[in-house]
Image (cartoon, rainbow, N blue to C red; front, side):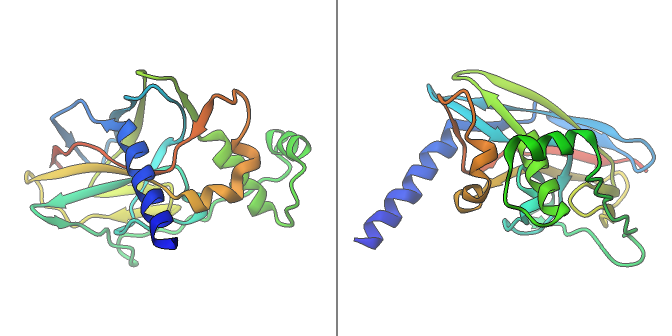
Length: 221
């Protein structure tokens, strides 16, 4: 019985994932490290369902696997691919400059957020995570799409998820592939249900994986 239930959940998530797609309209882009360029993309709802999607356009995560940390829930993963190889950014002393995120619990928006939700949280960083995730909610009606743009530069990329600068070992004038990946685990959403399950009730929160189309990217440094 457990196996049947598990298969049903997996198939259900697959169907819901196919309801949504991420589309990068450009077939080819040029990037430099000196000037950030806008990478624009859309999230389209192909279904007849009303969806809430967690998506943050302020930056990308850069992890090499599908695992995500809770504060990064809703960050799209940036993938740079050389042939069939997924490139992993360097996070050593050469490529990485740590700049810890400053949490400001006295910020007026965060204070209002605390009063509104009355969550049983002990630490300010927990409040900030709940606040950030709540701000990432995007409502997408059936057959409609939302357009987003995110600043990006290579070979040095300032990652929101890593609070610093990461270095990709890419060659000048060489073409690579770029792809976006969104992972929203259902089990992770349960923790944040109080700040996600708001009006309008006809919208259901999306869980699952969405992979964008691949485009060509060339580095001009």
